Image (cartoon, rainbow, N blue to C red; front, side):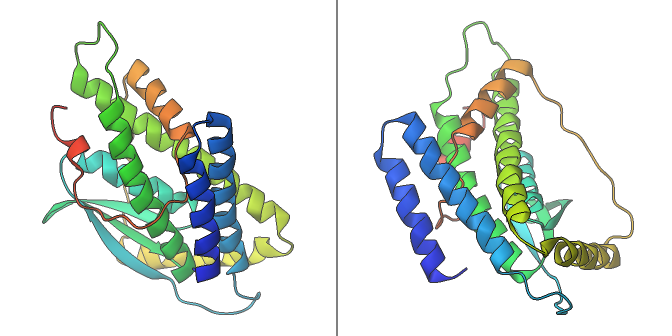
Length: 230
């Protein structure tokens, strides 16, 4: 991603972080995510230009490794990459992400940011009175957070695509190229759906709606806020 674009995103996020007004913060966050989505469209090559998709394997450490892997997967999917959960490996759950270079970069920037935000959000969670299955509540909160972040990212991506002229064919060709790369590695793919618990999921959705969709510069080291039993 161009340094100029990164600098604009950083400025928007700095404004979001300084304000105590939720409406202002939401506006700055929406602008940052829209800017990243526009960059994804602007980085498309001219129609007929042949590029080769790349791929990378991301390992998400315990605790909450599966939930973190799901966040990484949906963020990648939202920005036109093709993720596959490939199970447990050395160090945690692994996600194999396929996509073109610019989209892989966006997926990495967003996922690394949102993993930290999810950790800090979970640290602030207060389990409602009467909830006895605390871990199930927290897991559902994580799933709700992830689903809402995915929805918001897809809205930003769709708006950027609609504002572009002639991007449809290029995007369709790139999706086909990515799917061919996936099929070459994994001819048989299974889909699983996680189970959720009502109140935790709804509270996670609310937190995801407030997430900053453009912060950068974090690592995937395990955050203490995601420790087991918290």
